[in-house]
Length: 169
Ligand SMILES: CCC1=C(C)/C(=C/C2=NC(=C\c3[nH]c(/C=C4\NC(=O)[C@H](C)[C@H]4CC)c(C)c3CCC(=O)O)/C(CCC(=O)O)=C2C)NC1=O
Image (tube, rainbow, N blue to C red; front, side, top):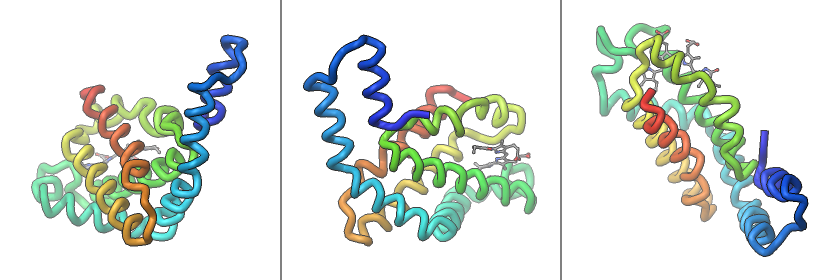
């Protein structure tokens, strides 16, 4: 698993080179956004259950067919599985935020998920919508807490969404 620092070091070590201007700029960006990253993660950690609940409610308000007979999140068990998946996305996003790198999402979340969702008929469009709603809820809370990190917060959520969309799961 990589973070912003190990990613740079690994890249330069492979080439046997000292860190150059580009590397220093990347590292500076990471460290200067560090406090905001940790604070945003703390907002997530302190409100995770509320965030997931709010995002789930909004998703099912927008797309009630998901929880009607024939919908993938219909039945208590699948409803709970859906909220649990949102909780997974939120927790791993909080790790990626602190790491300043999406590698943890590739390694722990996205790997093999395509096959699983395919075989269970979990629909991708609504999943991506759920991730985008999670993003908006977190951004609102982070901003309410007086932390200027909307773009930083967006990155891992948008990465997950893009991977889902591009993989065409
Ligand atoms: C940490 C990494 C990780 C992820 C991401 C993960 C996802 C994951 N979601 C699953 C199921 C599921 N995922 C959903 C999710 C949804 N259905 C919808 O209609 C909505 C769009 C959406 C919620 C937003 C549902 C309903 C199931 C159960 C499907 C079934 O069993 O038929 C399953 C199948 C096994 C199980 O039910 O536990 C996995 C592995 N597991 C992991 O370990």
